[in-house]
Image 1 (cartoon, rainbow, N blue to C red):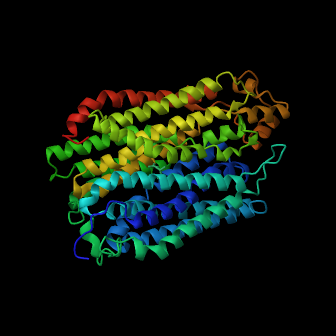
Image 2 (image 1 turned 180 degrees about the vertical axis):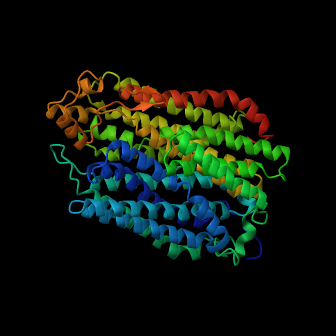
Image 3 (image 1 turned 135 degrees about the vertical axis):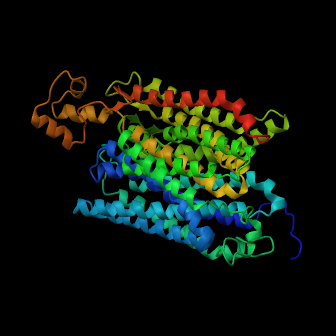
Length: 558
Ligand code: GLN
C-alpha cells in the first residue's frame, strides 16, 4: 500500500492491546484486592505494616516504568518489553501462589517467597505498563492523532474491565469465609493462581496476535527493536531525544543524594518511600535545568509539575481501596448485597465497574461542553476531581461517626464512595495523561511522563503512610473484649495493661495506642476519614485558585 488509508474506525491492533492490557490489569488488580488481607491473615502482619508494604509496592510499580521505558527505547523495543514484563508478572503471581500454599508449614519461607514475588512483579510492571500505553499512541499515524482521545478512552475501559474481572474472580475464589464468618486463610492461593493464569493468557494473546495486528496501516510491525524499528517515523519526537551535559547529570546525582538524606533523616521516611520522592524531585529539577528550554516551554513544564504535585493527594486518597478501605470492608461493614454476603476484597470492584459504565459518557460530556465553548481547562477538571474525592470521604466520615466500636457500616456507603471516586478519577486520570502529552516539549516528553508517573508513585507511597494511621476497627474491640480487655479504655489511657495483657494484644496484632498523624492523635474512623477530606479538600481549593495563573502559563493549551 503506498498511500496511508485514512480510516474511520480504530485499527484492529487497538483491540489486541485492549485485550492484553485487560488480562494484565486482571492480574494486577485481582492480586491487589487480596494482597493486604493475605499479608494480615496468613502471614500474620499488622494491618499498619500491610498498608505500608502495599503503598511501597504500588509506588515502586510506578517507579520502574522509567526503567522499562528506557530499556525499550534503547535496547529491546516495546514488544519484547511487554512480553518480558508479562512473563515476569506471571512468575511473580506464581511465587505468591507458592507463598500462600506453604505459609502454614513454614511462614518465614512463605514470607521470603512473598518478598521475591513483589520484587519480580514491580519490575514486570515496569517493563509492561509504559510500553503498552505508548504502543496505543504509535498505532495512529500523524493524520489520525485526533482519534487518540477516544483511543485512550477505549484503552482505559480495557484497563478497568480487566480490573473488574480480576476483582470479581480473585476474591470469589481467594477470599473465602464460611457461614459463621470465619475466613479460610488457605484460599488466597487460588486468587494468586488465577492472577497468574490471566497474565499468561494476556502474554500469549499478545505473542500470537502482535505480528498480524499491531502494525502500521501499511502492515509494518510496530514497537520492534529500536535500531530496526521500521515504523519509527510514526513515533513523534523520536528523533529529538533530550541530551543532558555531564555536569547537569552529576549535579542531579548530588541533588538526589542530598534530597534522599533530607527525606529519610529529617522527614523520617523509609528507604523505599525516600527513593520514590527523591527520584521524582531530582528528575523534575534536571529537566527544567536544561538551558535549551524557551520561556513558553518552561512555563508549560511548570504547569505539569504543579498539577503533578496536586495529584499526589488524589492518589494517596484514592489508593486506600486496597488497604484501609478493604480492612474496613472486612472488619466493620455489613456486606449484605441483595441477600449475598460479598467478600470484603470484592467491594473495590465498584470502581472498575463504574469506570466501564461512565468512561464514554464522561468523554461525551467533555465533547458537548467543548462544542458549547465551555469546556473547563484541564487543571480545573482536576481540581474538580480532588473536590469530588473530598466529598466522597466527607460522606463516609459522617456515616461512620455514630457507629461506635461495634456498629457496622452499610455497604451502600462504600458503593457510593466508589461511585463518587470514579467520577473523580475520570475528571483527573485520563485528563492528566493527555495534558502531559500536550504540554511537553517533544524532546522531553517521555521524561515528563516519567515525572508524572513518579507523582503517581509518590501518591501511592503517601497512601501507604496514610493507610497506616487507620485506628482500630470493630473486630479489634471485639477480640480484646474476648480477652477481657476494654480496648477503648486502653486507647483512652484510662487503664494500664499488665504485661500479660499487653502480650495478648500484640499477639492479636492489636495496637495499644491510637495512631498519630502530623502531631494529631487519630481517635476513630471519623477522624481518619476527615484527614482525607482536609488533605484533598485543601488541594482542590488551592488548585482551583491557581487555575487562572496556570491558564496563562499554558499559553493557549487547554
Ligand atoms: N487505574 C489506572 C491503571 O491502572 C490508572 C492508575 C494510575 O494512573 N495511577 O492504569
